[in-house]
Amino acid sequence: MRQFSILVIFVLAFGGAAVLYEKESRKVKGVLTQITELQAQMGDLQAEVNRLNSELEAVKLAERRRPNLRTMASRIRRESTPSMPPKPVVEKRYERKSSGLVTSDVTTAPPAIQSNNGNAEQDSEWSRPTIDADQYQEESGGQEVLDPYQ
Image (cartoon, rainbow, N blue to C red; front, side, top):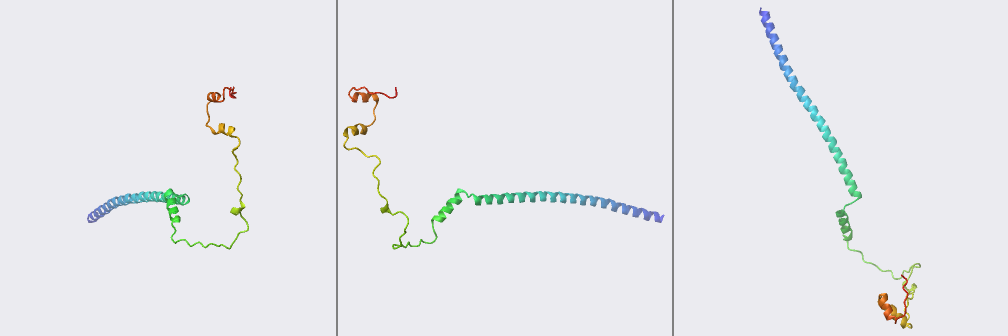
């Protein structure tokens, strides 16, 4: 009987240990599944970060190729205000180029439209502002004026 009681104690001890082991293993399995889920989420987030970084680089490259107005204005402002004073210009008076036009080579042309100062009758009519046809007939002294638009 003594052996039986020792056997019962061993069975209860091993049974209790098995139950405790099963509970702890379930906890460990739950933690491991949470870890794998978090690793998968971290991989997804890393892929998203990589995609956003590549988009940012593409935008930066596009900005370098096509600068915005603020960049262009600052570049123009920077180029227009030199950091060093300009060098004095030294004229070379004795150097003459053999090709090219000189001002004295160009001759002035007469005006394309010349006024006839001797024909005062024609000039007086053309120098006045335009008038209606009826008023022109009255001024022309009753002569019949043909209207080309009738």
